[in-house]
Image (cartoon, rainbow, N blue to C red):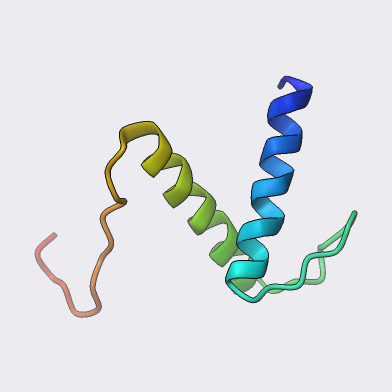
Length: 67
């Protein structure tokens, strides 16, 4: 991974963490819950998808059994 893309990813990770209310610190964050880590990771996927396709990421609604 190129150095520039790694720093961009780190910046995006901390931005998203603050948007969803998760307090990340520099270095080790193994003490955050799986739910909080999932919030960050899920939002990273959503942003990357939107940047790549230009479309909003499809979201599943509670109770949706269409799949």
